[in-house]
Image 1: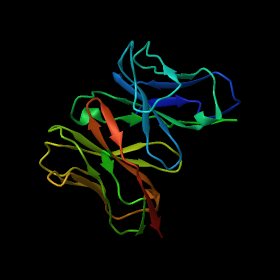
Image 2: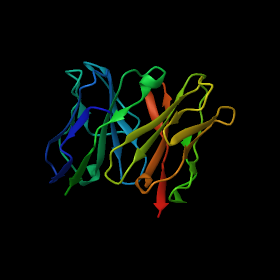
Image 3: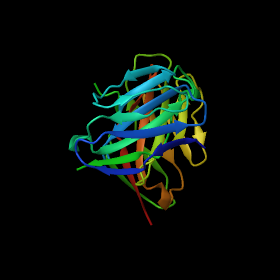
Image 4: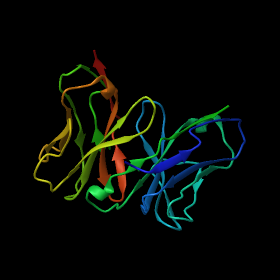
Length: 116
Length: 112
């Protein structure tokens, strides 16, 4: 069973607010990921990290930023939320990233963000 | 170009019957991994099964099995003895480099 946590689970916020979505895992995984997903649609990778002090942008351009100061923590920040940011944000982690079953990504429960 | 194709946007299956969810993929790598995830209406992504490109046997996990046909580049998920709790979105995914690419998903509805 995966031990990866996201808070908050649901967030409704007004336009222009700064928000931080929290993600933490207790599995000691080096690789962590953020995905954006609209209801019933595919997942889009927006950020990933190989390890501490390593962050990369994903395939989908995003106005959000991430940091990785500790192995277990990978928060995502939106400096100024807009209605177009309304979506579900899923955090994941994996042990490896270069082949084998260790590539399996384990997901948190997600944060459903609504920007009014 | 679409890396992962799931041609069935929606599927229905009778409870206790088996169902196959299709997935084809496109890669020029020799070494790759394939995954299936389940996403219920609550939104979490649940890992179901993994198949490595060099694995000679099809992967199985309980009621889930992966029908891996390497030459055809297909990795279909077979769910045996469907249960009402199997109603969900199902995503096929493939490791490409350090990233995992997800398909568009198939919505499965299990009918009592």
